[in-house]
Image 1 (spheres, rainbow, N blue to C red):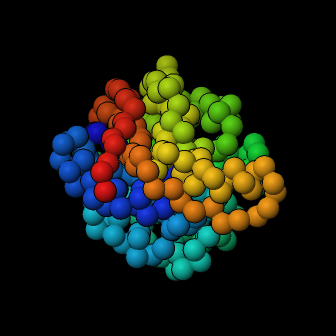
Image 2 (image 1 turned 45 degrees about the vertical axis):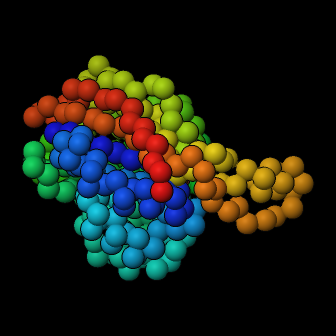
Length: 259
Ligand SMILES: [Fe+2]
Ligand SMILES: [Fe+2]
């Protein structure tokens, strides 16, 4: 099974690039599954229902989110009914959305789970217990499982990755928007990367206009952080997995897109 996981879609540039490229990527990379994190799609924060629809219509199989999940409250109704999008599994049980989904691929079912870290993040439930619960509920319905670990600290992501080694196909990081050079396969057969990077404008501060972020950071004067526009790239990881659900390879994916 060949899976492409793309990191946080940031604003219109990132969103447009994913919609524009999804079908071509599926064909060229011989993908069985395309999963994206879309927590920053709507002007840098949240995801609108029409964007979710366009992403899935364009060839995205499933969407993960993160701390910006409910920033566009319109998505709540969609989260309650779709089986192609997940909330962080360690969010409250009553929070809108599913803790896991299983999607069909030409190579069999693929489970998708998102989990939030706890270092420098809003307090959430234990990610280890939450992911264990999700895995137990998925049970035998999928041998292949992708976990999006949405966290600030690399150590937080590594410890969750190591905890899940041998239990899932891949643990791939999002949230910090900067790709890390640590893609590897752990001894138990789980592919890992601390952060796969964002899909958005790289001539920026993690996707936002440099001047605005600098002004607010230096002066403490609040201002809207516009999404930047230049140097749009799609970043992610391609994981190839064996029939038994263990990872065979992982490679960083990066594509510069002209819009
Ligand atoms: Fe985030
Ligand atoms: Fe993000």
